[in-house]
Figure 1: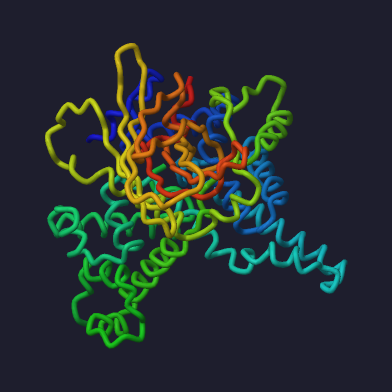
Figure 2: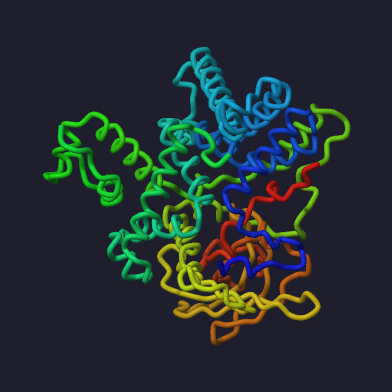
Length: 207
Length: 250
């Protein structure tokens, strides 16, 4: 596959990780977490920090609260690592689950504060910053899907992007790209189902 | 009960934005079949989420102080997650982030990724010393471009950038490497009058982190930051693992 020809002196030869390899790395990271390995934990933060942070910021609509929640999620994951059960699901899904709970807590704390200070006291500017919190579920969907879309195998992602963002039919995609229609359809089906699984499971499909 | 809807038909319905109230014969079955209805609802939810993604939904790194604060509470010897720090970079000028939060950015972001795959699919892995990537138009722009990575002996790398359909400008066009959050970037140089340039890459720049190439229109205002006016953008490669994927694992 042509994209790997970008490998450079920095040792990034394995630019395209097949899902199985990604799953394996996630397993290693999970094992490291269970062993209390701080280096693994730092790697886990690099891998899932952006997702956790963006889930929180898109749900809460407030940068400071999102940073607080991100911190709480990772501290909870570290301190509660004994409660992570790899057999029940992948590490990413576990972290997303913690993020959901911490976000709900933050929203509840906010509404408690809101009860104390009357609604009238809230400035219009602050309220508009909270617009995205109006539909936290769809915000969660979008962030999870954006993350999963970037992890789809290239051909699946390309077919879906042409369908969704260029409004091409599958026949038009086949014509435009020269890929047989049957292959286009199977890429679309696999890709869309993987996206669907990601939001229905709320976490990681690939590990 | 009639046979369930074919999985491909189901996906087609979700892709084509068929309204639940449309007079589509496929919907007749869905109306009668609970399991097909449930599946269709989930596929539509996923499809809607894809269509609604904005730049702000793309996972972006929390500020560094968040990890610093976590690390302080873990113990004294936590390594920073950014141990492989990228070279010094510039950030967006004020306000540019806001302007980026448009659906079209996401479309361009992903479509940029789309184009690189055409061609080499399922073909024998021919030796290609240079990888050409298409740069997709950004937002309402009409420019199109390509970028090639040239590997030279001794590890030197150049980017060959060509852009067609550039708008008239009183300023100049600058080429950037940027990370996937469009939050960190490195200015590489300017396009020549013909819309092309060969620009050396800084030695050691991690293309897995700085995975996107962007061309912006810059005014002559002396401000070295990105103007926020991107004309084309595309990834240098696809499927790059995030930095954590390459973290040392004992």
